[in-house]
Image 1: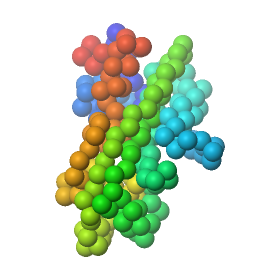
Image 2: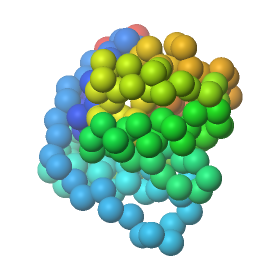
Image 3: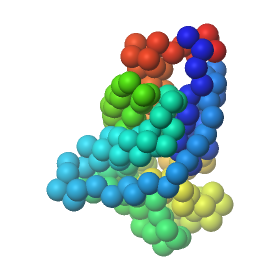
Image 4: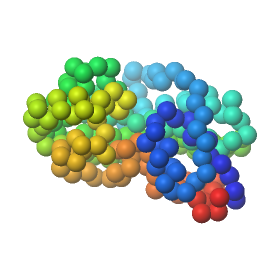
Length: 194
């Protein structure tokens, strides 16, 4: 079945991952409130927000197959969002240094007749990062658009991540194998029939 996918995300990384799998995609985006109930289990937040984004976009682009996603970084039952400034990014990386944390990406796919959602969790371990490494990374890469204040595909991931358990692409922002499987099984969309 030939179909264009509509990715509703600001993330350049999500767009790159989807394009690399040979899907025909277009990017459309309307700002959506990303709040969630404070009592919600932290590992459920990413999927909740992905569904919330999808429902909003589906009202506007209702004849399209829409993909939305949200990624959270969780350490000690606390979500680390996107840092607003240098000091906040520094604080996040100091917290992740020498520790293992979880990265959860929630995904929601819908068209005019159905909607599915799921989440994927990857455990990421960092070595102990020196103050110089943290400063260099933030100053050079400016990770203010990344949950947890880092991009695993960037320098800090290359020199700092000691292990990952789960999907690498999930940490980048999109659990692509699970997404491709869902598009095939539930929406009958294959990347090589576009």
